[in-house]
Amino acid sequence: MRSSGVLPYRSEVAPLPKLRQTGTLSDRIASVVIQGSAFLAILSLILIFIFIGKEALPVLTSSEVQKEASLSRLFLPQHARAGEAAEFDWQPISDTPKYSLLPLFIGTLKVTVIAVSIAIPLAVAAALYTSEFAPSWARETIKPCIEILAGIPSVVVGFFCLMVIASWLQGAFGWTYRLNALTAGIGLSLAVIPIVYTVSEDAFSSVPQAFREGSIAMGASSWQTASRVVLPAAMPGVLAACVLGFGRAIGETMIVLMASGNAPVTSWSPVDSIRTFSATIAAELGELVQGSPHYHVLFFIGAFLFILTFLINLMGRWCVGRLQKKLQGAA
Amino acid sequence: MPFFWRVFMKGKSIAPFLLLGVGLILAGCGGPNSGEQHRPVTVKGSDTMVILAQSWAENYMKEHQGLTIQVTGGGSGVGIAALINGGTDICEASRPMKTVEKEQVRTRHGKVVQEIPVALDGLAIYVSESNPIQSLTEPQLKSIYTGKILNWRELGGKDAKIVAYGRENSSGTYQFFKEHVLGNEDFAREVQTLPGTGAIVNAVSKDPSSIGYGGIAYASGIRVVPVRKDDHSEAVKPSLTTVRSSQYPLSRNLFFYTIGEPLGDVKTFVDWVLGPEGQKLCEAVGYYPIVQK
Image (tube, rainbow over all chains, first blue to last red; front, side):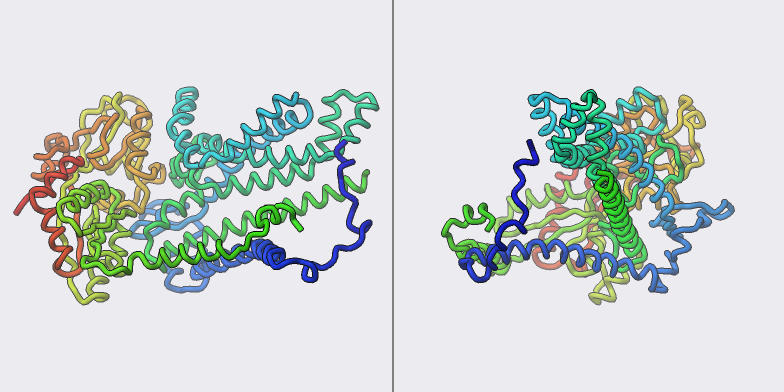
């Protein structure tokens, strides 16, 4: 049984003596190094945010930048060509640069939703299978295989999409655009599946064996046990997995850069080409004059992405916490 | 105590690792400062020209022992920015420098920028091998890329929507196409942009109703469409003679830029590039030698 292996909680044993009094020199150095690396993670996060924020701020403050890229230009429709209706346009290199974020936002949203709605059902089902139903040889094969999928560089996945998947899909469905949101979304789901799978598999495995035994003792079949006992009990963990997968999908750059076509079209059709925030930054930041409006707008997008993922994570945490409380209360 | 740490350290002191690290850092710093008679000549800029400049540098260094040429890409804009900031000796660019950029060099360095055409390139128009279209005029290309012509039928082809591929806006090829073919109008929203000419060639070869543009050196697995200046002129394919005589409408110069007249090691390299050996390498790579005046 899994739960029998748990060590007694610290309150049951005498408190550990302080490290400072007993440790040798190397012990002390070791603990400082470990502590340091934990704080380094937080420090680098803060530094990155300060840097991005500093470069993004001129969009809100500098009048010179605002002449080209004020908030209303970023979010409201603009007149693209003389005599045409106002539209949302992303054309930063132009006689009159246009920086509407809406096409990029729609593109990012479309590809993320597609990727996540392909990846989550597949990954959670696979995790449920390997932890509840699979014989041990199948588990030992499937688990490492999916984990290796996470190790494939995303540029390779992107290239595979560009060359192979795009041709298959166009051959099968005859879409006008080879490279579109759906192609990129399928490629992106390959990057999301391993994360959702690994985290939700952990969640399923950590459901106490007693739950399963109890359920089967009551006469439930193994499918009923998996779907009505194990899945709900592991729900907070599965939800956390989905949030992580969502964050990965929003931030992923190389796959969408190669497989989505990068055309900033404002359309909700899943088979139109898209341009995402992250791909735009990757493609355009390379050779910009520092301090130009275009440069600051790209950092503004970076800050926006940062805050977006932060909020999604926060929301995910809140949901997980609530679920956990509910489950504990019910138990 | 975490046991793995104890196993790892097992009585060893951390000092050797620290020393090793410090040593490596010092070694890294020491390298470039060690005195040499000739400072390396740096060449930076256009991605289109990287393969060309690299083959120049390799052959030049074989002939001239002790001289070093460092070539890096990044795009024409990167090279020009580096030239303005004093980060490179030679800037390579697949588009002419803008007046604003030349002004910036003059105010920063007090010298006039030197423009040295070093090779010729014909910007090829790619279509799929199965595409029956015979030729395209420059105005037709403009209409395709600004989104006014949407179907191959309007050009005498089959009834299929045109899928247009282009380069990212950081590319010199993008800028050249925008200036010379679109007359500085905006690209249509539907134009798909791909990272690199290789990716465009790949996409066009797999897509029967697509069109793309890029350097002639990359054309394989696709068909290069002859281009006409307008309805009345002849259709011309990019080749040494048509590009050199500017008969091919999308001919362009590839440039070196230096701050003031090139001097010393830079001058020897530039002279060599413009000499017979350097110009012969243009053709080996897939571009065309410049006309000797």
